[in-house]
Length: 248
Image 1 (cartoon, rainbow, N blue to C red):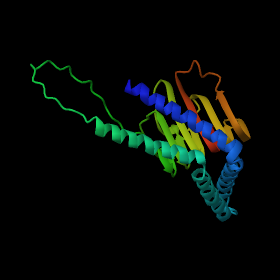
Image 2 (cartoon, rainbow, N blue to C red; image 1 turned 180 degrees about the vertical axis):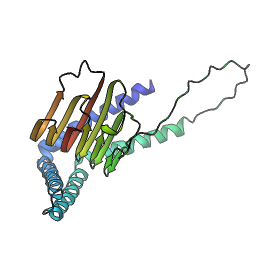
Image 3 (cartoon, one colour; image 1 turned 60 degrees about the vertical axis):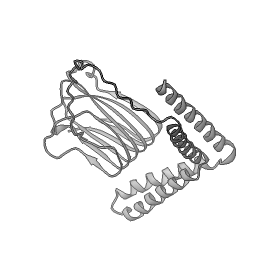
Image 4 (cartoon, one colour; image 1 turned 45 degrees about the horizontal axis):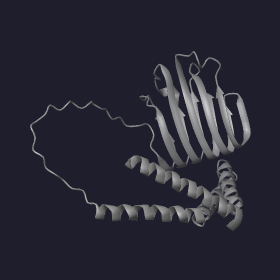
């Protein structure tokens, strides 16, 4: 019951937030879309120029200006203020409720019962962590493979599958990034399926190159993927950035 109430609360919050965002764009702040696109454009141009020797300094200036402009645009949004107020109100209501209905601890004396043994769980260290800023890449030497499922903010991600032994069956890689580039290096004997979503950027997937990807979803896979013993399914999403998948 509590879980359903929480889900209903989140659902209503998302619906009202979407409604407030629509009203803000249509009636109160029509320049919001332009300012966000302008900020993302500055960030994209800055990253592109920073990768070149001549425009490296200018690229950094454009990148920082884009980040600053994007943050200011988000903070000034009426929708952001509404969500912040809703979160604070939610915690305030929870605090008041906990004060009115404190938890009661009752001690019951009963005959000892046979307790079933808990199932043993093993915790392993993931290859990547969720980060907001910075670059992540797989180790240079041989490493043990773990399926990847990460969310990053601003930065690049590099995955080299040639230094690990992939298990038989389907291996999964999930990468969700806001701004940055994703590079995945795949051995020749491994079949690949790629689901990529991007707002603005470019893609290079083996021989398939698209220099301008604007609000697209791309799905490609190698011919023998369905019947392969070893295969990798890759899910990536970018707001602004480039995806490169190549053989090594």
